[in-house]
Figure 1 (tube, rainbow, N blue to C red):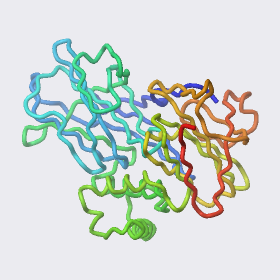
Figure 2 (cartoon, rainbow, N blue to C red):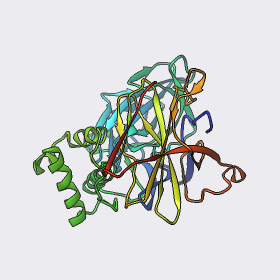
Figure 3 (tube, rainbow, N blue to C red):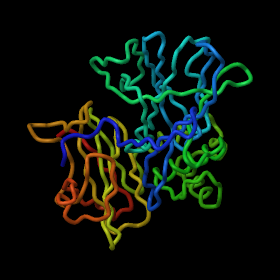
Length: 362
């Protein structure tokens, strides 16, 4: 197993469609389908001069995201984060008149989605911190800070004199579709079959949602509550009686991978981030004959944590292919010859219908 994980997953700048449209693309597997995700920051020219009014960011993605902003002003650069924005929601990230030469943005999905599905690229590398932060001199990182790519944004001037920018996927959801797609995505992670994630309502989505609400003792009215995404995320991050659940009982971040054997091929998939004290349901769909698991504790620089001079990990004897960056691998032969790593996975007993693996320091 490689002893380091990238601080950011592979990113690819696809194209600059027009001066105010930046598209960034990655791919994420959802069950057997592959979703192309585009984090889009859309805007038009802002009023002449450096004075900006309130800046609002709106999320038209199917992920709950956290964003950090960067402000360039007279050769000084500051960053601030994190601002959480649910699907179909907006949030003011700068209040009042702001003098700035440029405004920049970095976005990340919550850890509940596993390996971050939100790519980020840009011409500026600025400092961020894991938790809420304000960094006055953001081009020279200090202790506890890490460099991250920021993209310049050109928000749209609205009729009320404020500014707005949208984060969107390749699917180009409107607000209603983004909210439903966000619910579908979390239902899948929680173990309910709401596929495909398309923002379109139907009997399958309704059945999955009804089952979720019943299992949590919630009413249908709760779906329209402002905190419904928080309720869903809390449910996803708690052990489940069905499917596979990982729970992190260590003080370290854990990166995990899952593999499934459907009788025809063994597919390994990772990495999923599990924060301390949290649980996660990997996106295992269908009824695979066997499920395998591997997990490893990492430090703030994504290097393997050692316990008694050995990597702190949880695996087994089944040798499968992995790589340091995000992966989905269906061919398990000659891993090393194909430039991949060989990692020992443990078989998971799913005979009772559900299994919770708890990772703890021995």
